[in-house]
Every structure is written in C-alpha cells, then in structure tokens.
Length: 165
Image (cartoon, rainbow, N blue to C red; front, side):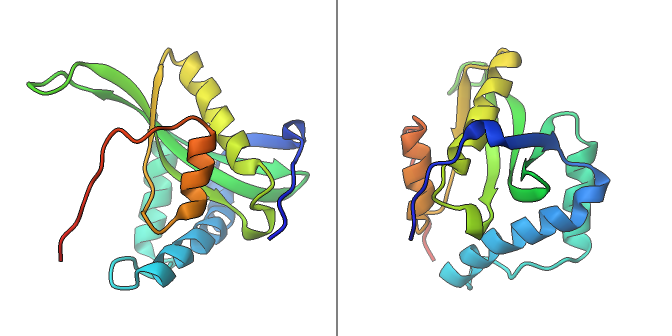
C-alpha cells in the first residue's frame, strides 16, 4: 500500500448532475463491494437497479442533500454525500443543526493519497458557509481505513451503536 500526498488544489469539486449517474454508480459499487465482502449477510451486492436509480434521483432533487464528486483532470476521484439536518429539541437533546456525512467514497486507485481529507475539508467549508458548527459521520467497525481517516480529520466518537443477532 503506497501512501502519498496529493495537492488539494488539484482536485475540483462539482455537484453531481443527472449526467453523473454512471460515475456515481461506479464509485458506489467499489465501496459497497467492500461492505458486502466484509459482511455479506448484512450488505447487498451493488446493483444498478431501480433502488439505486431512485436513490440517485431523490438525492439530486433534494435541497438538503449534497452529492459532490471530486475530479482530478477529467477523472473522478470519489464522492461525498452529506446533508444539513436540524436535530429537533426533545426531552433528551437540545436543538442543534448538524452537517451529516452519509457516504465518503474514494476510488481504489486514489486511496491513501489525502483525498478523503480533501473531501472532508470541502464538507467543513460547506458547514461553515451554512452556519453549522457540528458535523457527524458514521462507519462500520470493520472499516479501519475510514476510522483512521476520520480520526485524522478531528472526528471523535460520541456514540456507540451495537447489534445483536
């Protein structure tokens, strides 16, 4: 595994459009395959089916969600999907706006080169522009690479979720 440093100025971030359907699916497929391989009894294989089409179309139509593709020249490096969410006040928690990252996918050929951090920096700038000071992200326990990336970016564990089969 070669670890390199990329120059963040090289990457161009663009909001996904309908024309990016195949690009997003190909990137999604890489990371979904990793999840399926790690836990095939929990994660489905990536399929370019009506569910993915619905997910993609709904994401593009939403004013609250951001699907951002990073490009290096004309090659997609990865994508980040996040949304602004206002957690309503309830008996447990105070009212707090959050920018929540749902997916961060880096193309296999571009991993370990700093691109994950560049995508998170993009999300941090967006949060600041929106007046949001808190960000959240989750990942599966088997994904040590994600854990290292998110920890390096300053994320801290605030909650543990456990499962029982």
